[in-house]
Image 1 (cartoon, rainbow, N blue to C red):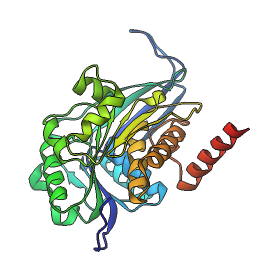
Image 2 (cartoon, rainbow, N blue to C red):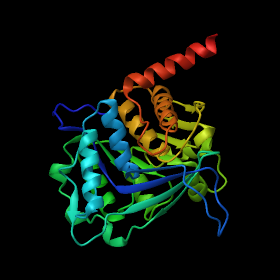
Image 3 (cartoon, one colour):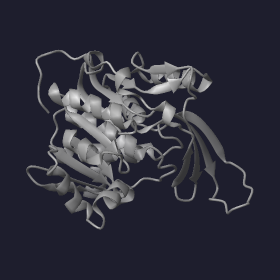
Image 4 (cartoon, helix red, strand yellow):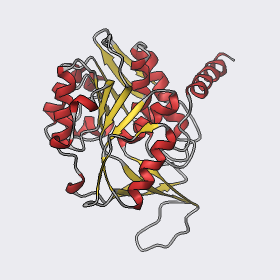
Length: 312
């Protein structure tokens, strides 16, 4: 990551979706027209970039979130929770004309897999004129998720002009995908994205193809299948850490936050994806996208203990 003499206020600023999650832990996934009793209900903030900023804050980084929410009860809850986590919310855009987006998530206790339904309208999109680059780019790294296409492209262009690395979370293909890829230094994509964008291309080959768009390094995650990565040196594979998974919600978002933390530490790519995989694995041990996000110390101990287990 390029070094700058200027002291930045934030280690990372995220521009993207912030949503309120209602998570229901179910004993099993019900059939159509079936009634079932919820084992546990959790209410907490979510969203790809928002959860990545929370992850970074727990790991010890200085973060700020740029997102549009309503001035309703849900919006106030989201801001208060972010502030409690240590994420700066001074750049949030609060509007009385919109309803804060909410996700309703059903988690199958037997597998940890989840189904998500979200009530987000186009009016919730950030618009380019609502961004203030001089203020929003007082950061070492910019993180985007592409939900607000025009605004995300605009802020990514400004970051590129200022030599600020851009990390992107692409869980699926967005509008103007080629433009995004030409502006992103570190695309971290999902297996779903690879299938949508590259067809039958393997993850191993997909990350190398992403480098041709100008990326410094690229990563493709595939849940329990691990993570594939490549940079100008070579390709890497990181197996997933095995844990007793309760809920996979937000695992990719958490991976992104931990990945950015590794960039901030100037670690080599293999070390970054190993660390990010460990943080994401620990997140899956509790219900909710943020409940079990670990600290830096807990993650290092987890990795160290796994290494000792293999040696025995």
